[in-house]
Image (cartoon, rainbow, N blue to C red):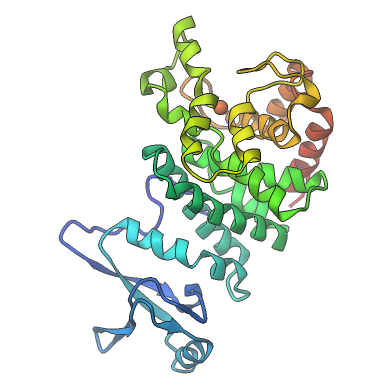
Amino acid sequence: MTIINPNELFPTIDFTDGERFVPMHSNYIQLDRPVEQDIYLRAHGQFIIYKRQGQAFNTPDKKQLEVSGNNIVYILAKSDGDIRKFYENNLGNIIENKSISSEEKASVLYKCAVGIARDIFEKPDAKETVGRSQVVVENTIQLLAQSSDAFIQMISLSGHDYYTYTHCVNVLTFTVTLLSEMGFKDPKFLKEAGMGALLHDVGKSKVPIEILNKPGKLTEDEWQIMKQHPEFGAEIVEKGKMPERGVDIIVQHHERMNGKGYPQGLIGGAIPIASQAVAITDAYDAMTTNRCYQKAMSGFRALQIITQEMSGHYNPKLVEAFIRILNHKKDK
Ligand SMILES: [Fe+2]
C-alpha cells in the first residue's frame, strides 16, 4: 500500500496552462442522482460531454457503459480542488459500492479526509468545513463497520512522518474503532465523536508556526500560548455546526483522568468518555510519528509509556480496549 503524502493527494496533474480531463472509474459516480460536475467520455481521441451537471447518472446508464466496455469517464478539472470535489461529492457511493475494494475505498476516503483537514487548518473560519467533515466522518464510520481490514488499511496510509492533517485522520480512525470496541455503536454518537476527533487540534491553526514547529523545549510563555489551542479550537468550530460532543473533545482532549491535564484540570468521570478516548488516540499517534522534537517510537514503546509512565492519565478500560484493537492490527 502506498503511503499518502498530504501534499500530493489525488493524481499530480500540472494545471499551469489550463484545464485537464481527469479520468475516473464510472464506479465512482453516485448512481441515480444528478451529477455535480459535467462528465465526459472519450471517443476517437475526443472528449464528448456525457452528463451535464444536474443530469442524473442512472443504473441503466451504468449498465450501458459496462456493455460497451467503457468504464472510464472524465471530469474537466481546473485544479486539484476540482478533483477533490468530485471524490467528496461521490464518497457515499464509493464507500457503498461493492465492486470497489476495501483498500481502494480506504485510500479515497483517507485522501478526502486529509484534504478536508487541510482546508480546515488553512481556512479555519470557513463554516462549510464542519459540514464537509461530517460527510467524511460518516463515511469513515461506514467503511470501518463494513470491513475489518479497513482499520489497518486506513492507519497504514500515513507512514511515520507527522503531518497535522494525517494525524487528524489517524485520530479519527483510531477513535471510532476504539469507541466501537468499547461497545458504542450508536451512529450519532460515533459521528459526533468522530467529528471532534478529526478536528481536535483545529485550534493549533491559531498558534504561531514558530511555536508549533519549535524543535527545542518551549519557554513558559510559549507553552501558555500552546496550551490555549483547545479553547481556540472551540471558538473556531462555534461558527460551524459542530455537535456539543465534538466541541467537548476539542476542548478536553488534553484533560487527564488524574486532573493533571488542561485547560480545566477536570478529574475522572467529569471528562466525557469520547474525550477520554481522544486523549489516548491523540497521544499514541503523536508518539508513533516523527516530530520535529522527537523520533517516532514503536507502538510497543508508546503503549508502555501510556500504561506505565503515564498511568493515571488515561482511563485504563479504554487503554485495554485500545491495546486489543492494536493487537488485532498486528494479527493481520
Ligand atoms: Fe491537542
